[in-house]
Structure formats: structure tokens, C-alpha cells
Length: 77
Image (cartoon, rainbow, N blue to C red; front, side, top):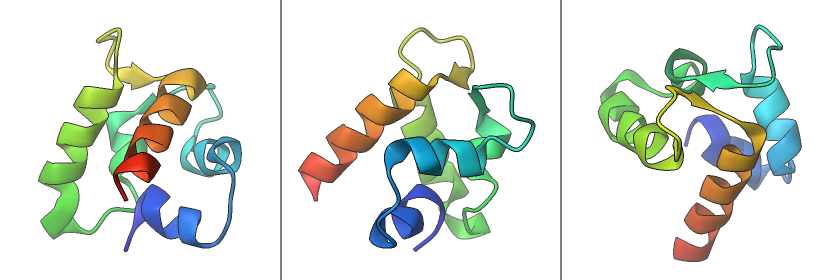
């Protein structure tokens, strides 16, 4: 398990997960940042997750988009 999924198992809030992934502290996640902790063999699938979560198609995830996506993913599991 990698990235946000691994962090969720450790009990981190979506805000804490977002902050940990936001390497340059610009308050948004690039696809590169989102995938940074993802194993190479899972990057294609996680890249598709990024694209679904990016509701305004600006190629970045805001904290709100991230939280909404994480909540949807949690409901599926």
C-alpha cells in the first residue's frame, strides 16, 4: 500500500495526508506530487484517480478536491 492509502491506515486526516504530499507547499497537489509515493507498477491506476479527483481540470488537486476524492475512496472500501 502506498501514498494516501498507506497514510490512511496510519490514521492521518486528509488534511495531514495532503500536507505530506504537497512537497513545495503551494497548497495544491500536482500529479507528480500525488504519485510520488506510489509504486511504479501502480502509477497508471493512481494517475487515473488523480484525473477523476481533479474536478476543475486544472491539473492540480486542491485540498477540497483531495478531501472529496478521499471520502469517495473511503466509501468504496
